Length: 110
Image 1 (tube, rainbow, N blue to C red):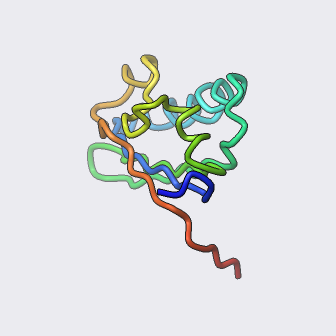
Image 2: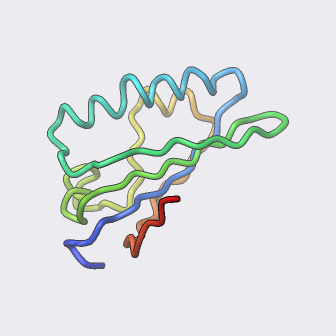
C-alpha cells in the first residue's frame, strides 16, 4: 500500500434498533470530534451508513485519510485493528475486530 495515496478505512458494527440513534449521535458528536482534537489531521471525511434489519441496525463506516501515515496516527502501528472506544462497545451488539483498508483509485462526481 502506497504511504502517499488516499486510504479508505471501512468497518462494520451492529446495535439494537433502540440504540442506533444513540450510537449515531455518539459517532457524530463525541467519537470523531475527539479524534480530530487528538491531532489526526489526515482524516478528511467520515461516511456513516446504516442498514436496518428486523432486530438490529448495521453501521458501515468509511473513513477517508490523506495517507497511510494518517491511518497509523489514528489507529496506531497495528492499524488494521478496529478503533472502538469503550463507550461504543457498551452500545454495540457485535463488531468487526479488524478494519479493511483500500487505496483510492479515483472518485467520480456527477
